[in-house]
Amino acid sequence: MEKQLNRKYAAGQFFYFSMFASMFAFVSVYLLHKGFDNATIGTVLSITSIAAIAIQTGLANYSDKHKEIRLQDIVSVVVVSIVIGSILLFFMPIEFFILGLVVYIFAMTQALMTLINSLAFIYEKFDIQINYGVARGMGSLAYAVMTMLLGYVVEATTPDILPLFYTVFALLLLFSVRSYFLPEDQQVVVKEIDEPIEEQVAKDQTMLEFVSKYTRLVVLMLGIVFLFFSHTMINNFFIQILVPIGGDSGDMGTAIFVAAIVELPAMLNFERLSNKIPVSRLLKISAVFFLAKHALTFLAPNMAIIYIAQFLQIGAFSIAYPALVAYINSVVDLKDLVKGQSLLTTAMALSSVFASFLGGILLDSIGVSQTLLIGVVTTVIGLIVVFVTVKDTSKEPVKTESMKA
Image 1 (tube, rainbow, N blue to C red):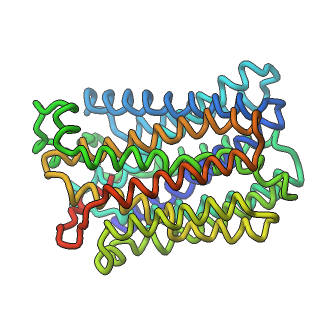
Image 2: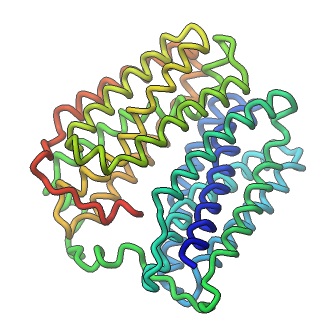
């Protein structure tokens, strides 16, 4: 039974990230094809990020208040709404409604990530362990493979077909989620994944008190906003960056494949890596890789250099995210872990909003090269903040429990 559920959950991760890749990796390709400019695309992506946070919060609150409703059922309703929205988008001829549907579909998909992750742990009370690391690795593999394949499919056909891929992958995800049940369990009461930690949270502590207590960590998170700015901007507007040096949708898919596939070994082996190298040092190493990657992208005269830059993802985001989670677990008290991790989520969301909104405006107003140069500057600022604010964790025990979610 455990092996069967592991396979079903891994399939869910695979189909979710296939859908995610078909949307977010090609959003600029799709909207440019529909006649929208970069500023509009950036605004749409910014609104999407903000809407996703609101939707995610609403879904979490609903799940908390209605524990008699299975998490699979909540996920299923969200996925069905994505299917309906994707079908409408495929046939939609009106520009305004195209943008509205893109915001809705993408925000729902982004908000769905937390619920998909939570599915891994709902059967722990039955002593059934889901190997989240392997399943998440399948998701990364799906993202890598699908971006490469879809890049060539879109280049050979038309971006108009992308909503059909949203629909197909969403239906496959729905099928895998509906199959993810214990046969003898028809009334699963969903528990809060982080309940053991939340019980220890000082509920009367205000965010202002938390900021005062962990000022250095808050400043680090501001640095992360700068460090991730160019990373998100490049991802969102990749096709606009590649066209001036002779790239197309197929090349973009291959470049994203390179970055996604090299993430796998680092992410899957992070725990082993962090046992040999302190997470504080890993954070500094990842900041250097970010700078090298963004600088190389700025200087790239052709696709060959872009591929090399994408390969540097092996030491950039693939290390930065798990290292940030582990670092927060090391430097904050156990009772403050929830607030600490939410601070990281907020920092990444802010970086995404700024990168999407400002990236589109900058591309339209000053061009690709100058925009990438600004991205390099923001990365330097982020790197400096990381080096100044990160505390040595070589003697700190790493708490790994909360890394599951």
